[in-house]
Amino acid sequence: MIRDRARVAVVGDFDPSNRTHRFTNDALEHVDLAAEWVPTDAPDDWDDRLSRFDGLWIAPASPYRSMDGALTAIRYARERGVPLVGT
Image (cartoon, rainbow, N blue to C red):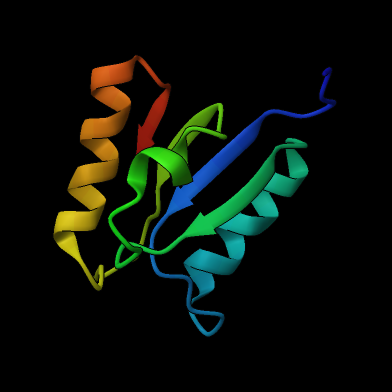
């Protein structure tokens, strides 16, 4: 299956009132990346949740609901060679 755009997981707890979160969405749309926010307090199925993405972006301007969740996503990327951006 050929996809038109790379898929990026934005790991963080999206808050529509947070300007930085809205700007993150705008930036990803501008560079034509398909993005999906993945909350840090997601269930423990991190492998299943993250395996469908081509890269991860650790969301800026978060106090994360679960720092362990954010760190788990970072560990997932490092151990599997998945491109990771942390801001």
